[in-house]
Image (cartoon, rainbow, N blue to C red; front, side, top):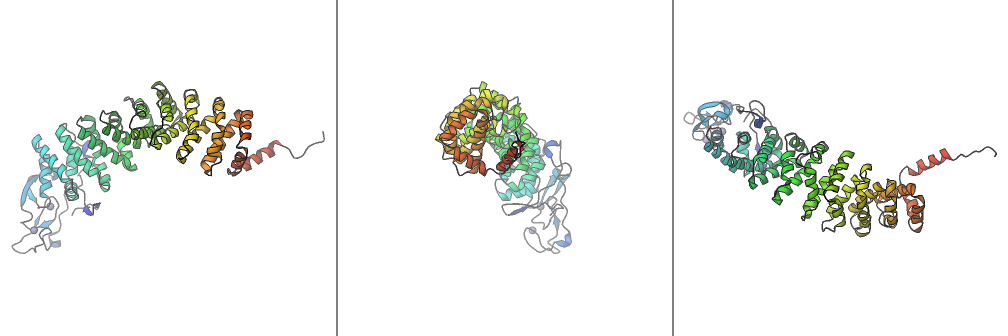
Length: 468
Ligand SMILES: [Zn+2]
Ligand SMILES: [Zn+2]
């Protein structure tokens, strides 16, 4: 059909996407033209590709200027200007190409009413896979992206609904991304107020951010700013999708500084959402913060400071009893990461008690217990926390040290070793009551620990001795 071999499949249909003559990102171009299809050789065609009738002296061969195929005059009778292909005069177009060609031609008119008609028609075509094929093969995609450059609200509505439909076909993602779809979506989102436009737009960005390749592209194409703004939208549904999208973007560590330093005060907004009455919002916002807390020590300090000044939301979550256990898992994961910040120990003091109490009350979730004991072991590293932790020694031994789960056992062992170092007597006393045997068993099972202890003892304790 044309010279390119990038055949894509959408729901079983083969699609050969239109190519642009010039840079493929049409959102960044003042104008664009499609590459002409290579004409099928007359000799290669014995029958009309649409009606299957044989060519002869009466039934002559004609080329469709859009798809380049050979057809009979009945199937290729329409004539229209095709400015998108560089044809100013009316040219032959086949019955298959005609409906979408007409819309693309109209969309290039200098009159808004024609442009709107074109965009509306294209947005209706992409609702089914056959229409998707026609729109993508005849440059309808590029036309929609290119139209997104202008400011009409109705136009934005048609375009964003079409781009959202197209975004649902994963196989189209590379074509969408290289044509400038993400830029068009971000631009529409930054300039629209209508709810449906915002829902279509942010949903499209979420779809793109689920793919790791497109996520990088989305960040590069400016997705972060509209997403941050929409996280605070008054419509809960829009804010939740924005928050979910942000939690996908945040998996990309390169975005952390931009989020934490955002002028749109993303950090206080996300912290405020941890107090939402919607547990799903709590879950996502805490997960997002847990990602942010993986970064630099400065990022961790900023989160702790901001949380401290905006009302200790994280502490409130740890003291709450949500139905959704994942809320607590994400909160404990976050606190565990924050606990590694030396400068934040003072501000984090109050979370230690509720954290330790969780070991007694939420033994059913291994994920939660693992995050909690990791957080506790991180706190145990600092001598000033020892007196707060020692009263809970029995919890550490019962729920973690005696556990069959190695991750739990090792974290508890780490915690107790820190405590033994900082508060030897109190810790030993506590361990004698219960747990000393488990600690020793645990130590023996930690790979290489016995060997290094052995080495250390050999170095410090001599075997031979001079007579005294
Ligand atoms: Zn025909
Ligand atoms: Zn055609």
